[in-house]
Length: 232
Figure (tube, rainbow, N blue to C red):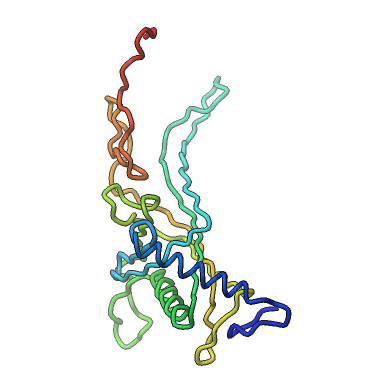
């Protein structure tokens, strides 16, 4: 049964609330000591607004998809393949924890600002109708999470978010503030499609154009020397 205001049903111990509070306090300490690794930061390119959370990441998937077109030619079993593009999509989930009513309210306010960033920037109203506006800027984002979601120079990765989901943990409960529910614990998931800002690929000599792509590490060995005694 769901409950609110941290008033628990009979037979349910305080373990959930206590464990959540201890986890929140511990992780806040870790995040504060190293904000580059311990925080995930969302920035709206259009409005300049910024929201960040302690990176209590529960799942992370970074997918690269290589697309080829194909032409079927008479007399060949396989189509003639030609390269089209390489795209990237990141899916991530993280938990947002509130160890107090004030913290839960702050978290939910930040999450509400994050949702607003999914909408574009509009022009001033045209004429007398507030509905008559034109789009001035699309809702593009920069997201920064350690070196997993980052530009090679360490800044946030440019892209668009195709979806955000909000899943409150009803077992952990809610605070009540002015007849509004504030979740103690909830999960946020997002799908992010990065946009390439530089050309990615190899030169004719075999050198990759962006050496620190995608996770900030230089190429380990470039053109390693042959092993002594080996046949080349």
